[in-house]
Length: 74
Image 1: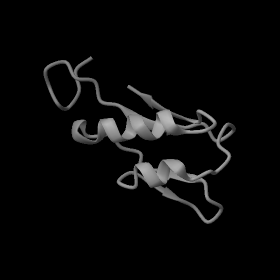
Image 2: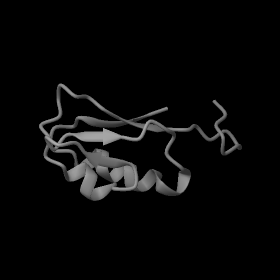
Image 3: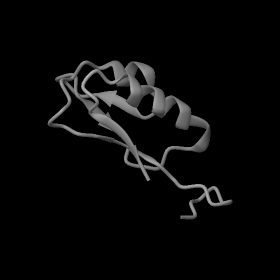
Image 4: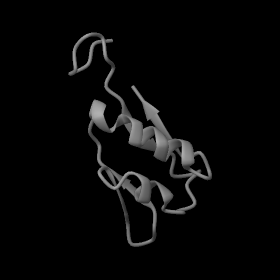
């Protein structure tokens, strides 16, 4: 699949499963460029593709989620 970056790159988006999320807030600490917390401490994620230069930060936030509620999807 060809993304905006060319050369066969796939654009990825960060998603949160609201059923799994317990509102720890670690994701917003690790990836404030795209995640903010609502009034109750749950993530609000920008609904746009993650730029290639921020993808590593998005992966780190998803990997660190205590409930595995965050994922990167093509």
